[in-house]
Length: 214
Image (cartoon, rainbow, N blue to C red; front, side, top):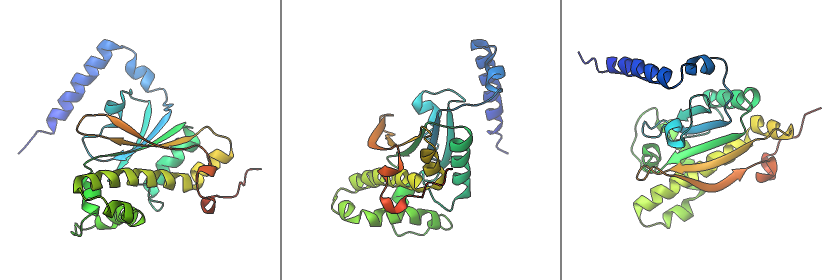
């Protein structure tokens, strides 16, 4: 029987020892409360760990990850994370981070069936349909995949802004920005796509909710 998983427990013990050596109060302080400034919505890909690639410490980033960093309005997991981050933790920045070479995006560009995940990948196909003229004009397949990764992130930024959770925060004058980034596995660098939403006016008017604050 393969007991390689036990190595993770040994790694944990070594990590605890190192943290205590560097800061004897590390766990005492960490256990008191969390007050992250950022909500990170990223891909589940094991090569894109939020804290490591942003150089942040435990407690600084609230994280939600799923296949292809999607914001699906029927996903209660994502909505619950978003609600807690915005309404309770009062994060100031939400970062949607995709990555080049995303398997979910590449799978969505083809016609192969994978099973249950096909229902999830359909949302990425919808992004392709919205931007098919631009994407179909890109002859190089790798470049087309890279561009769809970027467009997918941009659409998820829009989808966050469409939620009542985010719009209610804006209507209450809560400081909250949404950003779209992409991580490049080839060089480890993050790319800001230049899309940042700061208020409901950044969305098309059809998505605006009426302000119900007293």
